[in-house]
Structures are given as C-alpha cells and as structure tokens.
Amino acid sequence: MWDYSEKVMDHYRNPRNVGKIDDADAIGNAGSLTCGDQLKIYLKIKDGVVTDAKFQTFGCGSAVASSSILTEMIIGKTVEEVRKITNKDIADELGGLPPEKMHCSVMGYEALEDALKGYVDKDEIDTAYDEINKPKTEEKIICTCFGVTENLIWDAIKQNGLKTVEEVTNYTKAGGACGKCKSAIQDIIDTYYHKEKKDKAEEKSSLSPAQKILKISSIIDNKISPELQKDGGDITLVDIDGNSVFVKLRGRCSGCKNSTLTLKAFVESTLKDAVDKNIEVVEVN
Ligand code: FES
Image 1 (tube, rainbow, N blue to C red):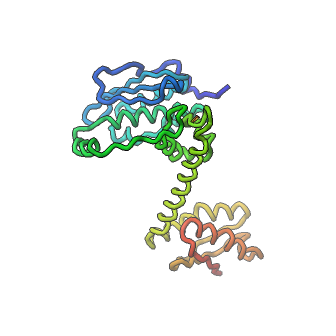
Image 2: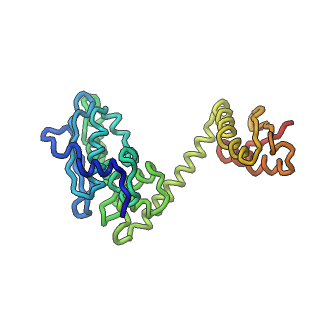
Image 3: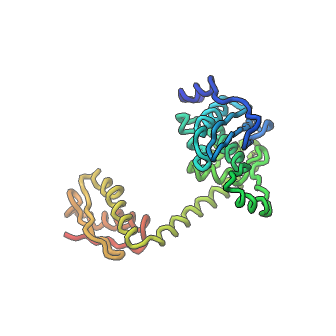
C-alpha cells in the first residue's frame, strides 16, 4: 500500500476547482483514456494573469490531487510564472507522491504545457505568428503503449534527475506495458547525461578569472573543509595564482604523514573535477 501525504488525501477527498470553463482562454490535455489517466485543464487569463483554472480528470486519487493542487498553484500567477512550474513543483506542493505515482504530477505539467502552448498573449502575437508559420515537426513518440513523447521523457529526466528506466516509467508510464520502448528510453537517459556532462565542461571552460577564484574558494569552504573537519583536520585557502592554488593544512592534517596524499588525491582532484583540470594545489607553511 502506498503512503500518501495528508495533503494528497485532502485534495483527493475535497478536490478544488473541478469542472469546466466555457469561455476558457486556454485548454490543455494530457494522457488518454486508453492509457488509464486523462486530464483536461481550463484557464481563464486576464492581462497576463491566470484568474481562474478548472480541471476534469479521469484517473486515480493521485491524479485528482495533482490536478486539484495545480489549479490552486496557478490561480493568481502570471503566465510567465506558470510556464516555469514543473512536475516536481506539483509533487513538492503535495508533500510528495509515491515514486510509482509521480506520473500523475507529470500529467499535470503536461496538460499545463499543452494549454500554454495554445495560449497567445496579445503582446506575443507577432512571435506566435512566426511560430504558427514555422514548419511543424511531429513530436517523436517513444512509448506507443502510452503515447509518451521523447520531449516528455527528456523533461521528466531533466526536472527530476531520473537516472534509470524504472524511474522514467514511474514518472511517465513509458515502458510500463510491453517494454519494447525500454532501450529507446535508456538511449534518451544516456544522451541526456552525456549532454549534461558536456554542458558542465563548457561552463567550466568559460569561467572568467574572478568566477574561477570564487568557485575555488566556495568549493574549499563548502565541500573540502567540511570533509577534512570530519577527521579533525581543516584547510585554509591562502592564495590563488592562475591555476596554482596555495593552501594551508590545519588541525590533524597539518604535519600528517599522509598530507601529500590528502592534497593530491582529495583536494586537488576535487578542484580539478569541479573547476579546471589544470589546477595544481601547493601546500604552504
Ligand atoms: S512501447 Fe512502451 S511499454 Fe510498450
């Protein structure tokens, strides 16, 4: 039996904003009855602010609770703020969901994204015109059993830090029936983490000298020093000159016969990993 938070139970038993808005400014759909869950969300928007939101859902208690809390989260917010809401925000607002039910929060996010995709603010008309005239590219379906697209899987991985196919199944349902799509899901996970690694490497190489100093100092204070303190030692940053980082070991680390090992295998390798592979750590007395 799954463990539900009080808030999930409350929104399931007393769902807010159930129904339909006849003159809605934006409508979004997610899921399908053949897949077991479906959500339709209606938004009323005035001067760029969501003034009302209602939903109709066919699904389990978590789907009802996710949809209900989502409507509360967006009423009163600007469209720009609403566009930033992720499935993780929905689950967090509910006080968490069991892993196997995270797909309900993803369904909320997906319906919201669908509604805003179709919504055009008056100020955005020119941009929208360009969008409409752009050649349409069909979204690639990865899981035909549940109609889950590549974009949705990518977003779920990115927003929730998913690392395994099983986690992707919990969050999106993809892979939860015949399983034929599992290798394609694994490919998306591999591509995502390869890209993230590349992005981080590019971010590292684009640091200005001042940003580099700040980053080194922050890593020493927040990551390296606390680790050394656990064994009664510590470290102080003395100076930075290009890629040379001068430090002083303190407490138990000072004069320890393993200090060179600590400096090279821990301090230097942590900084190389996080900041620049050319960093060299030098101990001063
Ligand atoms: S194609 Fe994804 S479970 Fe069947």
